[in-house]
Amino acid sequence: MKDKESRMSSKDIRWRQRFTNFEKAVGALERTIQIDPLSEAERGGLIQFFEVAFELAWKTMKDYLEADGFDMRSPRDTLKQAFQNGLVKEGHQWLEALEHRNLTAHTYDEAASIAVEKLIRERYFPIIKALCQKLQQEVQ
Image (cartoon, rainbow, N blue to C red; front, side):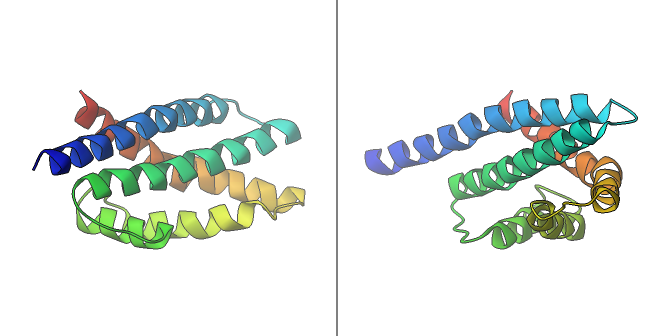
């Protein structure tokens, strides 16, 4: 039994540690979103901050859910389980954000990057921020 308790506490610690990095990434994304309008370089930074925040978001969710005994194999599985468990409310938006996060690495032209900026500002940052706020309550 002691081993099981040790494993559970290490898993609990893992999501909390990853959450610290997620929280910092959300802060960087939020500070960049407050700049309007963005220069080309700032837009590139915004997209990069989104990619990092999104990556840490799903990995934090994965660690959190694993601490509760779930086993996920992919970002998609993690997002679906997080929705089923009520960790996130906007399941479809998270899955859409996953698709766009996979495409942002291939965004080279200005029109596409402007479209991605708009999606980040209007659709993806709000759900990332909501997850951060929910997990902040868990940490306290």
